[in-house]
Image 1 (cartoon, rainbow, N blue to C red):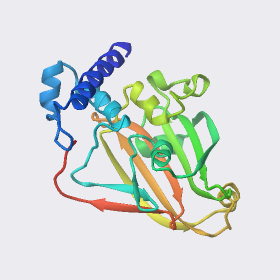
Image 2 (tube, rainbow, N blue to C red; image 1 turned 90 degrees about the vertical axis):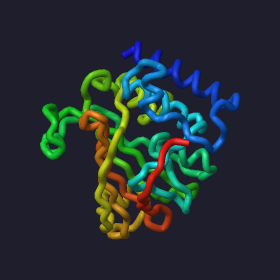
Image 3 (cartoon, rainbow, N blue to C red; image 1 turned 120 degrees about the vertical axis):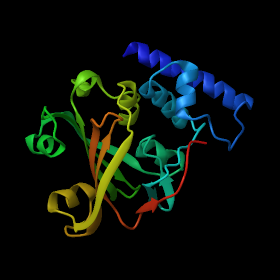
Image 4 (cartoon, rainbow, N blue to C red; image 1 turned 45 degrees about the horizontal axis):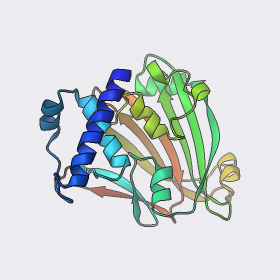
Amino acid sequence: MPGQVHKHSRIARVLADEIRSGVHADGSRLPGEHALRERFGVSRTTLRQALQVLGEEGLIATHAGIGSFVTFDGTPLDNRLGWTRALAEQGTELTTEILRFEEVTDPQLAARLELASDAFVALDRVRRLPDGHGVSLEHSRVPAVGDLAGLPARGLDAGSLSRTLVSAGRITDSGEGVVSVRGLEETEAAVLHRAPGESFLRLDQVYRAADGSVVEQVTSLLDPARFELHVRSGRGGRS
């Protein structure tokens, strides 16, 4: 893994220098993944790690051909960066409180995701407005395998789960989700400082790597007055 980290950092640095120097004009598309893999002689995973670094630096944006995205007060949230950073970059005054960060066993979730191991890294977070009211409650579950085993004891990379997953070579290639609306249970309402039974959006998502393995499962409760889910279709690419 250290070799891959070194490679993707080097590729990101080369492409970043080219973008800043005008080799890749603002608004133009980078060469396709196949061409970049051939140029640098790296795997798809390593290249996608490099592209994710460029995305975190705001040098490229990814536009999926068919997919969905979440907005907060009308502004899209880039899941590649993680919502905490995406919200901060748009100037939204939200605080993030970590409720739980530990390794757990969840046989039911493992069976649902068809995983051999029922060990997960559990990260539960609530995001609050300045008045203390919660606008989202998220339960992230990451298979505790490979470099991710023992993660709570080591801590997150720069406080970001998204960055930690990238550093571990766990790159999201696809995702699927289910959206519903339901009333808050008493325990959820207490955490969010909301009334029990208040209607919230429930977004249940599973993110997978290119080989089909599970990267992360996330269940989010979102204030429908602030969050919306948009669906788009058509051709797209990185720019």
